[in-house]
Length: 461
Image 1 (cartoon, rainbow, N blue to C red):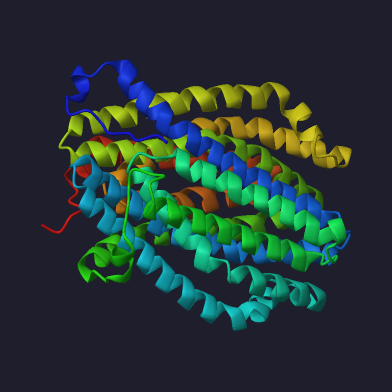
Image 2: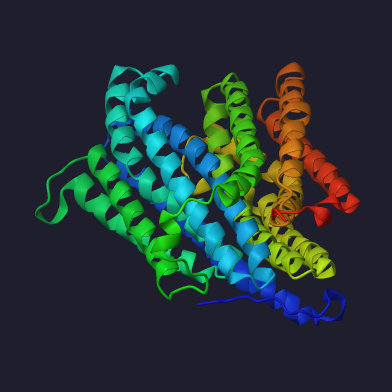
């Protein structure tokens, strides 16, 4: 396993290779972990498609909006745990780091149980609100009610993985994710299609595969923290003792990130409805372009996770210079990765979208959108790094404010004006998102330069 403990020497005196290596050691497993999540989502969608039941696909799609929102909210707890554990770990206070991890897990379990019990009866109403017909509501309700029980394992697993990253261990979450997703693919295939003598369960089989896989992931993550698979360790006693002071601090850091995710998701829903008003072919092309664009998030997300950990540990050790240097260096890595990806989008957009297979009209629109998306890739990369670094410092409010500005001042007005008022169609949609990411990045960079994030206190003195 990888344990990253930052040196106590000032960043300016540290060799560049040392910082570069620290970034890559943390980022690469996180990138692989994100890639694994993408692969399993893709494979699940393909297998459900093989059922040849449009209602099943629609049910999973609508249910996915609910689960994505929940993951955004509970992911905020994971970010908070990463930042607080990293700060304590960098200060050499392993006991404090363990206490933070234990309280974040306990808090997450309580909220997961409460959320599951509240949402179980609300599933049919939610699916009807999202526009599902009766068959979609019937299948979607079954799917949601099965998968919701995995929340008790899945969301605490996210927090446990975040805590391990805060201590510099990104490999254990990666291996846990590999085991979980391998289980998901195998069990879902067996139960969906009734392979090897098992009953053919269709959509319910996919739900059971997902639920049991998340249980495996949650158990592995908890076992890692309770055992010796990761440098950060907690005890059963710590998991059973409520520390209101620490739990309150975890929540204080998590709430702005949760609000940020909710605003972004709400803006995305409104944004998608604008695209839908442009016609079926445009909406289909847009979905293809979104899948291609998601490739840019993998390196950026991994590098942002590295920035969160290094900044938190550096500030915990009192090394502000190294914290700032790590953000700048990680941003350079992100510029390089997304710059090359953007160039490939411009040169090979038509070939890239052709693998999805569709009508010539849809593929032509999708290829155009992918080529335009190259204009936003640099902004996406820098924005995620700056936000990740600030969160590592305990500043979760600044990224929230910038997301508010991006959704309300940049994305929605720009897309509406270009795509609908000027009649640019899908081109206007993607130029509008490029304006959004550019505006967010400039604003976040200016706030980063002000340096308020360097003075954030994450502990109650």
